[in-house]
Image (cartoon, rainbow, N blue to C red; front, side, top):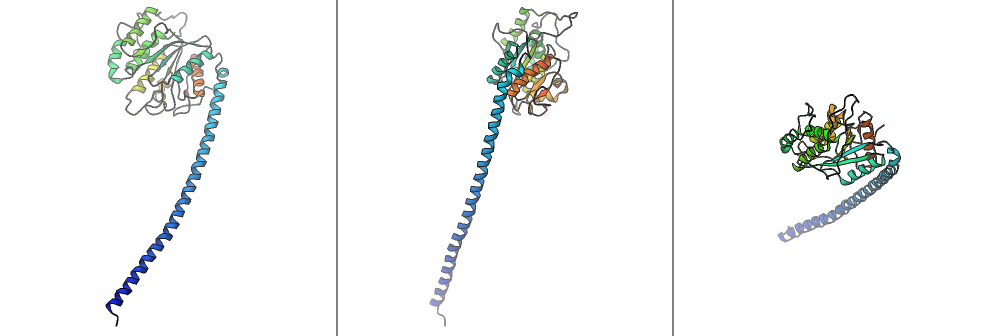
Length: 314
């Protein structure tokens, strides 16, 4: 007869065996699991290293291509803007290096920057639209000139006014446009500057045959009508002189940014040329070539972003 003591010893032995089995089994399982995880980690690390090598190789090729473009730029743009004057206009998002790069390349192309104008944050602020339109339509408009009847928004009206006072119009000899005097020009620009809409340095702004508007990259979704204002401003400028180019960084052809807005409107896209990669040497070269194309009466959409028809001017 099995005593209670023997029964208890048997149960204890069973539980002890189970515990030992669980411990041993867990160890084997853990060793197998950890070994697999280590191998997965090594494999992923090798993939990361391969991807980094590919990325570095691509960066080296891009840098080489950019260096080549920068080296060849003087030959590519030589005399393309000979004896032409360009008004250089910047938005608050424009990068200083892009602005200086374009100015230098205009000079290399045989042209000259006749003046620099900076648009302020107030200029593209929808809440300031009515105030801007009021100033544009005031007595600062040069005598004998008038705004286009289809210019109704703040960007179009301001661009039309700036075009009147700063763009040398194309015209037939028998149809000369009303002459804008230096005094009239200064009156209009001073009013816009004193109202906080533009910036410039006294004595360093004169009319030009062409205009280039330099902006930044992508705009946030809450940027309102900033891109639209700049796009319409540029299109209005284009109609007053020999042509205008709107050029921005990567991202400027996306969403609500200025280049994207211009390309989405067939009327504006057929007027002003657009470039969407100004941070690259190729984009700066394209900007200068697009100015020449404008002077010849043509327009285009260039770069790498949405809506571009080719990388550069054919």
